[in-house]
Image (tube, rainbow, N blue to C red):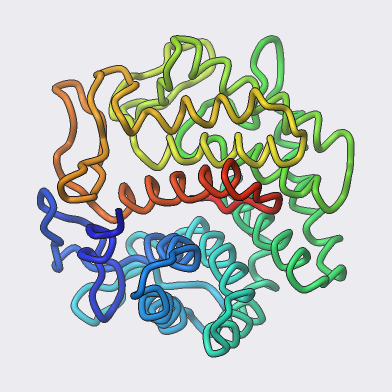
Length: 340
């Protein structure tokens, strides 16, 4: 199952794009992909696990700026700022929070140092998804290390998301913004995660309202109908059907699993499985996204079928959804769920 994931990785990190299943070295490497790849590698049981973990943590460490932020894109040994974003800060925090609990001492040390540098800056992110990533990372640090001094900062971020919900929720629209874009389920996912350490009933209510609004909208056909990135979904408009991205399917799977861990309501497991089946052909095009021959995942559902390229984000998203669904169902994992 990990062949393409390993094929996309060299001594620097996981390569961003591919031509069909062939890695495109000229596309470079991103913090976004290597942070998420690190989380997948930590949960692997393959012989190459430790080597992969060390590769990804080294990439993140070298890409980190003095102020704790990250240079998101590296191409041919040179960093570029063109795709720097608050999301990459949030994904870096989340990945480092999991690496801080890794069984490899040098990886734990590198992760703790990265967190020391970034957390004072990360608390001030302003984009909703970045806030959600940072919030999940803080919750994970609190769970792993017992650093209760971070609870007020985590609550500050959770309340910022609640304020966005209060500002935008009206009528039948139960959401944090006036439109839904990418990785939407990440937002309620983060609130469910925070509820694990705070037990604030309003946090839980908003988490349930927003995830239920999302799943009611996207699963009503009996399969996952992802918000396409050709236009996004604005209030009072139709959901654009294409292009549907694997990362968004994983986002739903993981959020529903976090909701199940928190509430023990089994319908969330059912919804997670429906979302996971998107990869296997239960989707608008009735086509599988997972390629069993290459063990990669196609980049998108498009009007004519699938985008046959199999980049890093797609395979990472599939693997994380697969791993965590298995962990929750088979191993009865009852902890914080990572996000893509």
